[in-house]
Length: 238
Image 1 (cartoon, rainbow, N blue to C red):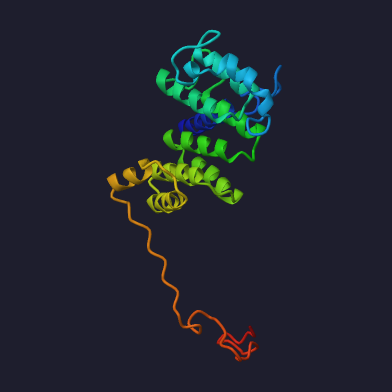
Image 2: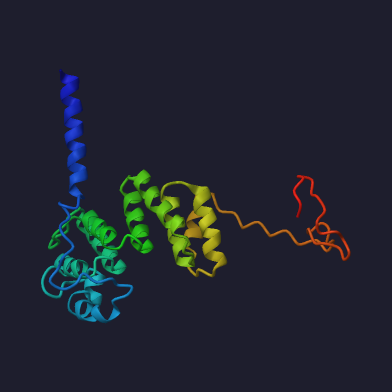
């Protein structure tokens, strides 16, 4: 009987946790102004950013219309996938040591949930969400979003650098190093990821690419006059 009660209690608690970031709990996306995509609706952003997401708000110094959380909330309801505003809300939650900062309408994770619902193709939102999950002990969920980003196929130094940082937080050192090499090869300027890998004893320089042999046969090149239909060792004609 006790076992059944404990099992029921676990199910209820788990259901409550999921409910905290459900579509219902995190509210509808409809808004009086917007919602707009920060990537494409550039002409719609200044009125919101100028009135609510000033440098003081972004740096958690002071609010414009009231509490800092209220101004970030307004920004994220109008522009749900604004990366700097999402990061500011996360930092505010950390600063206040709460999952629902003062002045915010929703929890920190709800704003991330809303951003994903709004634009599921925004890889930067998924990286931010994955980083948040990794830092809050939800490694498997973080990996899901990282895999989504990898499947998306977009390449950039900033993308690889941030993915490397998250893999490092998850102690997936090989993946972190792989993405660090990609980021630095593409010219990413900040040394933070490399320094952290060095501190963990997991950094190594990329292996040099083997030089191409001058022998055309070793490189698979065809000698002049050689029959191009010759059979390879596998028995398949070239």
